[in-house]
Image 1: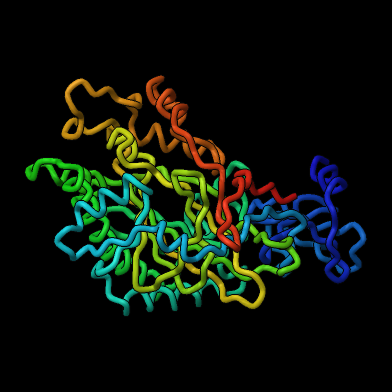
Image 2 (image 1 turned 60 degrees about the vertical axis):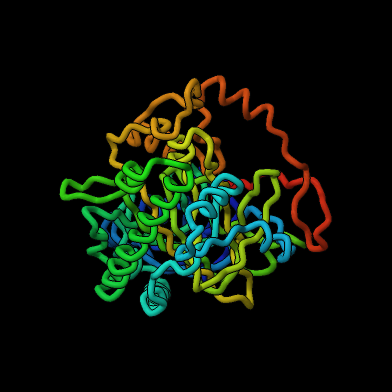
Length: 431
């Protein structure tokens, strides 16, 4: 069988009488042959039971959950440089007081310069975020088989796999669709579902306010300043394509990190939607890439929200705002788990994504060909995390402009020295 051939090529980790092949987080296994069990979460992990003395498969129906095995060390993981230049990072990440009179200009400046900013005085109550953090942590502390009850691809609970194209990371997560303003999370514990509903409602309002500030900062006339906000506003027919994601990064063994490198929690990527709003606990690990090619760490701040420009917003502004590459390095032994919640504001599937007429100057040409959100989403979900997803949608003028843009060849190090940037991290498939 093909499964047996793949098994022969992979290293084996012994767990009692059972040989196990590189799961990252405890996995639930199903019978697939007389000699091999395969993981139910499609992480390519398997159990070799050819030499197992226990009657694991005796009389068990096919496709019935058979055994849960806990092991914390994967065979292969990718690493990311550990960035320690906190002062430089603090200076590089813009901070915007959303309640200040000059917020619109500050938001636009941050989105032009970095594509990312810290939002303070956003109005989301601390009690709400604290309650969500507590209930999400309780969910991720459940036995793996209980969490798998909330799995309903492509949404629900998942671990290790990021998308369907081979990207993996040191994390587990909940990915949920938000339809007509409600979080589709029927399989989650009621207290967690309620906290997610309340939090999503509050953060959606922040996102809508930020989109209006963006339009204002770009100089859109007052009567048209709702143009971006309306694209992500839900309606009775479903309207916008909104999602909320809760990522949990458990500490990984320090032996997996080599020197000044850490294990990849979530590989580098841009967000395809219009806007993303992130909030995390006190555990660090989030990094962004600056326009000059440097990766810098973003210090966690539980009182703030962090706003990402997405690929669609880059197109809608004809490149005035740039979507930002970002990634996460997983915590190591001795650190607390990292937990983050991200709201993604995307438009309706039929929404045309093209530079806004309200922004285009006389004679200005579009850098991108027109497409719908459904077309771009389909293309993005067929790609790898680190791929340049907008590339196939760029017109020659955009490619020429990008080729003429030079980037400084340095990145952040422990002594803030300028050095050559590391190659883009790529998380190898776990076999």
